Amino acid sequence: MTAAEAAIRICDVSHQFGEIGQARHVQALKDTSLDIARGELHCLIGPSGCGKSTLLSVIGGLTKPTTGSVTVSGKPVRGPMPHDIAYVFQESALFPWNTVLENIVLGMKFQGVPKAKRRDRARRALEAVGLEAFAQHFPGQLSGGMRQRAALARALSLETDILLMDEPFGALDEQTRMVLGEDLSVLLSRSHKTIVFVTHSLGEAVFLADRVAVFSARPGTIKQIIAVDEPHPRKPSFMTALKFHALRDQLYGLLHDEIRKSIAETAPLRRRYDDTAEKNEGVA
Image (cartoon, rainbow, N blue to C red):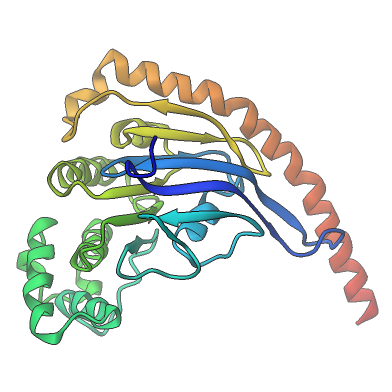
């Protein structure tokens, strides 16, 4: 992939939390490189704790990598880039005392969008996710799926070229996840945004992604990249197709041993943490 084709370039990124030798030291990512094309929906999948969300945070400029670099649209990432990148988190993070419309307008205020443009852009974003009838509702009056639609509308209103989505449907029931996945596929076909999407769901990754980066157990690095040759918007019938199940099985095969490694590595880390906690209690 050439530099012109890549919206995001990740070069030899490693990241660690804490200092080497300390009880809480964790090597989250190791020598991770990846090019993400413009207009692509790229899923990151791997065992818990393998650094997927850490990498998303590095891309978004919220975390500075220990080593390596990231460029977005040819610009080095040195901090948050609110005019280039919008986030959608697992929790909707809407202010409960503001209406849905007010929540979206507030996001644009933080971005620096002129006041005269905010409400029109907010209403267009709500229409894009099918929530225009709920603009004056408060978050507590919406279902979980509707709150996530509102969070997506807030991100869309910022009109960035890139969306980073960290398990945005993870807390929802399976049926709602499927419907929102269909809506996201339609959105991608219309907007041509570049989306990086972290998920633990094999089916969700296959249904949504143009490519899937499969991560190893910690320290996470990319084990393999799987292409999903299916145009957007994707129809529900794709989930029953032989190609869908073959790709899902391929992902499972790549992840199975990595998940086992992750589980095996967690036990000694937990024992070490407990031992440290006991020593600290003794000192206290």
